[in-house]
Length: 314
Image (cartoon, rainbow, N blue to C red; front, side, top):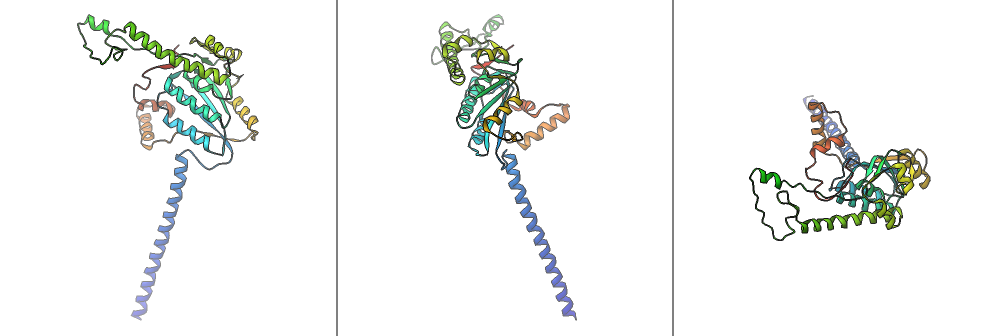
């Protein structure tokens, strides 16, 4: 009888262990599924049927566009992505940022159609990014154009002279110290920097002429740095139609022969958990009610617009 009781206890123990192992196996399997699904979600890609993507360019365009470029390349090579809806609401920014995004949009447009929807501002580098698209939509009140480049540097040498401060500057050549915050800009330095600005301006004009299929001489007449309203831009051939995001989406749907209820997937860089946590903490402590993209500006390194810029300044 004692032997039978021991056997019964041992069997019960084995059953309990087996149940625990089964529970552990199910838990591991479930975690694996969650990890795969989480990776797909955080990478911004979930297997889907044919759809179009929406990319928003908002705020001042910085020089570092690495994450946005990766999103554009990924969408370009995804067979499920049929076209791009490009929402632009920016006064412009760094010429380098505008150039790299322009080239990425142009490469995308060579494979799939792009429709641009302009917000209140799509000026300077913002317009540079827009011109490779097949169709540009602007509101009547949109400010766009402002085709030009600016480079500026402060000069506090006069103030330093007043307070009796002199700064010796050792350079390897006469152009190395131009411009300088502690030395006046020399005539040779001004000529050199004007050459840099002129070269970048020439690049901008070429982008507009090629993207909008306008003779270069005509673009030069329009490219004196002034902004245009959407209605003015339409009459000058700088945009194609008065309208907003809905009209741009409808154009894409008709061009691609897609259903009216086609999915529109927002293109967003992978989010950092630590950065998201800091945003929520700051929002709670400071009482900030704002969009995450705007708050992200608090964490961007200063000096992102050093150098030449293509920006509209009211």
